[in-house]
Length: 127
Image 1 (spheres, rainbow, N blue to C red):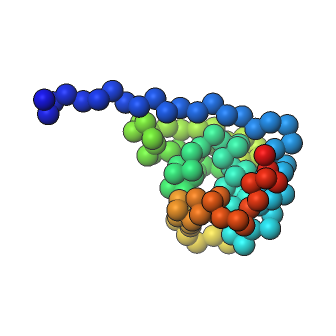
Image 2 (cartoon, rainbow, N blue to C red):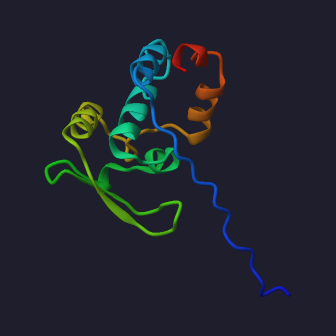
């Protein structure tokens, strides 16, 4: 019995931002004390990366001149390389200025979750 495995849970979501939601989200996060929150959200929308992938993203995995980012650890367990849009490159270039950390976002996934769950960002203002 110990060799029997349950099939993987299919918990995929299919949610798209509706008209005006992205701008309301940016407006609501503009007041955040965390300076990484807006760039994380903007890069997530531009790349489709998951929260954990964004938090784990390191500068050594990004090639701005080639317009790609290599994601070595993914939810599926398979590394992937993604193209970067012009806007994603602009976001990353802005973050790179004066950066000495290996991480693009030196913040924990828990900190991002905490911001999303806190009253700092009024959810009613977004949706």
